[in-house]
Image (cartoon, rainbow, N blue to C red):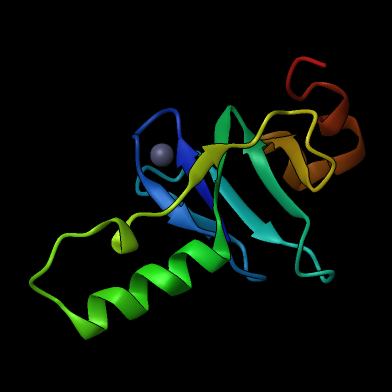
Length: 108
Ligand SMILES: [Zn+2]
């Protein structure tokens, strides 16, 4: 699953097909219909969590909620801007012209 980290307010928001915003409202993002590609505003960070790790950790927690073990840990990472299934757009401009906004997105 992908999360969005707002560089302005440091909030972290899980992305869904519906557009969601961070606490300060300067960053937003959502999944596209392919349920894999995300679109989010620049400069926010795209954070990935390994889905199998999350499932395993949730099960381990459910079976022993008071125990800390390697089974409740999971891999997560910041997606590089070269990741093909993460697209960045400029926040305000994206509302008006997504194509133009993408040209002024993150460094290539
Ligand atoms: Zn924010």
